[in-house]
Image (tube, rainbow, N blue to C red; front, side, top):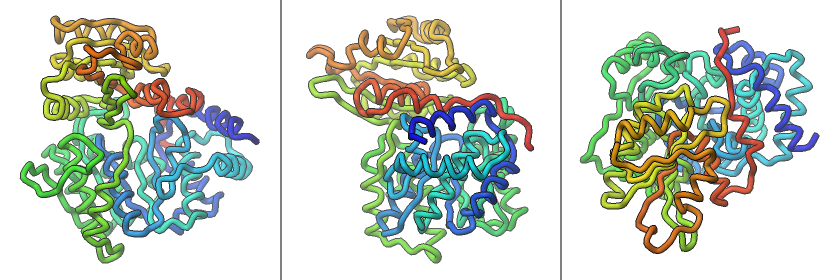
Amino acid sequence: MTYAEAIQFLYGLQIFGANFGLGNAFRLAALAGNPQEKLRFIHVAGTNGKGSTCAILESIYRAAGLRVGLFTSPHLVSFRERIQVNRQLIPEAEVVRLVKALRAANQENDTTLFEFATVMALKFFAEQKCDLVIWETGLGGRLDATNIIKPLASIITNIAFDHQQWLGDTLEKIAAEKAGIIKPGIPVITATDAPAAFVVIEQIALKNNSPLTRVFQNPESRIQNPESLLGDHQKLNAALALATVEVLQNQIPVGEDQIRLGLEKVDWPGRLQLIQKPAGRKILLDGAHNAAGAKVLRAALEKHFAGEKLVFIFGALADKSWPDICRTLAPLAVKIFTVPVASVRTADAQELAAAFRLANPLAEVFVCDSLRAALEKSGAPGGSPRQTRDLIVITGSLYLVGEALERLGFSPVDIGERVLNEWSQPVAPR
């Protein structure tokens, strides 16, 4: 089996969509020798900020000398991004080996891609003898395949509206799904600021006799943003990570110098990531894909890029709250290029343009049939001297951000692996 064939096999698992239920994950993990029983985890759920919080925790614990596994999703460009050890992507040869081994052991044919990838990660981390695994949920928490582990701590970053069609149409229902990662006696750390959602988390923690720590947004906090991560919201993510490190100090001691070094070295692409091609224009990539994320992006733009002309390239998935996102971002733009996302779930670029025109009649709005066309029309690849003060903001979906990294030459991998992010409507637990 080649790496391309392994990716093709994983792609074939997408016909089983997404699964709400732990049965398949437990079964496949058992076939792999239950590697989760050999590992220590910090489990991270929440609506926004999961990936950034995971990246901060990984960086701190790696600075402390630990061998740290990192499991996140979706990937921006390569499937290998999902499974990392000390921020090194899993090698292609290891992907091939694990796919072959698990495929041979798994005689049932209805395992989903995410379930399969979850157990691949567990097996790899155990084989790599990771001291700690930073473990991000996929969708929800309670019935997410990642929830077959018992962590040292459970983190719930925040609760906002996203995936309502599967997680529930109220913050309370969404909170109940996210709080499903809480285990008896295991500490819980959350930055949830929605009162109704916090009550749910508090009740579930109390029921499980799990100590609960709540982290608040504090503008006067001495905690600084990780140097490579823009946005005041990253200060809250950093505070959440630091609170977790403090809670676990007796189990995993970390010194102040190690914390400081970890915060200095954090790297998390695609989230307020500022790049600039040689002699070209500045480009900001951000995967703001729901209403709460759009508000965070707007606040960061108003603070860090005040006075600059903003040009948006925007594409979104149809099942996201894109009308709210358009209303939030439109007033900031002088030009907007709407594009389809490379996904069967893409929102229509014409409809996106109509929403932007309604929200900001003064902006120039253009419909493009591809990101490539929008990049060319906006001048992103090269730009001109009089355009260099314009900031191009590419946002609306992490899928779009991943494609942008490819188009702009920041990744050699082609679209063949980004399609692995596709998934269909979750099915009932089995």
